[in-house]
Image (cartoon, rainbow, N blue to C red):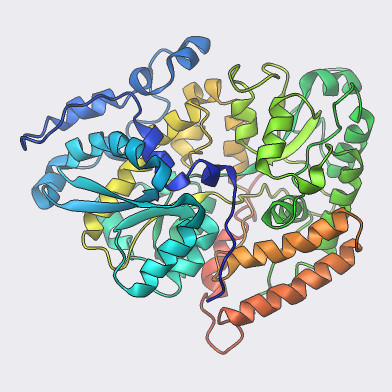
Length: 516
């Protein structure tokens, strides 16, 4: 199998496999249950609350009442039968693979789960910079040292196709996991592979467009309308040109156009609005057609007004430029809108807004669900059911809502969270974000997905820096992707992924009424 390069996306920089555990219940100093006496589940659940989890300064900043930022009737940890879980699994152990740097904090964060279930969690530290390779090596051995892990969602195909992951459909039904509360794009792309459930969505991303209010409103001559002030990418090009160098050190637009997957994500984001799809029903690359080229042409125009060093910029550089006030508009992930609200992280508090995705004439409204991470159980797990329950705890609506309130970059994928009025007061992009997810575009989770992202992005970057034309870049990328697909078992009579199974998740907006 082709060796994949490692992503350095921001959830991985923070060790996403451990992040849900290490941040989920910070501050809950629950007592040990070494004596074997488990507390009443209600008492444990009462402590998993806004007042005990969300940072005190953020609670004060937004006058938070302590009311739930989620729907308690949809929050799995408050609906599951913990007495049943204890009767069946108390005294067992779950081995959870985490990034080595976060093992200690993850152990502290899992105390409430242990109190609720009676299941002990043994952490299996894996060096953060070699997580994929170490996990893959253990999977291939047939005797992985872990029952559960969280990982970058594009890897789902690499791990599910060879049979390395445990099918979770029966556990989800037995324990009432609220799959209908997840937005379709996350359920289909982070949870299912070839029509079967292998994961629970964890860090649920979307890319969005953000504007500096002061600069943009001056150009527009009035307040920003989230849907109509920048209705098209042509308008964003015009606006970014007018705002370029509006002040010393301020560029018109922030772009992530570094080689590899960073450039791929930016190109996919824009090309999806033109109607681009990566493959046809035979898994032949088609992204070098008119829609793909239109997306790249727009990037090349925006690049004329982009932040210094955009051709080498990934998430860390983009985040620093946006939160530091060095760009007037920005194409990035949703948490650029949440983190910009927080005075300890941002220099642009109260001077920005997240808008609905600009459109492309003749295209569609297709906000891009890009990157993210998922939670899975190993096929060789010694305690697969206990591992499922632990992952259900870590990804439950209340914990994910409070991650968003803490602006730590771990994004919720639940309708009952993003549509919650209390949550929307502490997460500026939440309303537009939730509306947009009903129309989301996503790349298929395939074996070889990450080297595909690398290959496309390397060619896009070459076009951005002027080495080749946009058309040459996408033609080169299509040829490289065809080779990678062949190396991963496609075009040989029995593809490792059925296109019909993947298709429903690639664009979920067909036939749906626009939110504006």
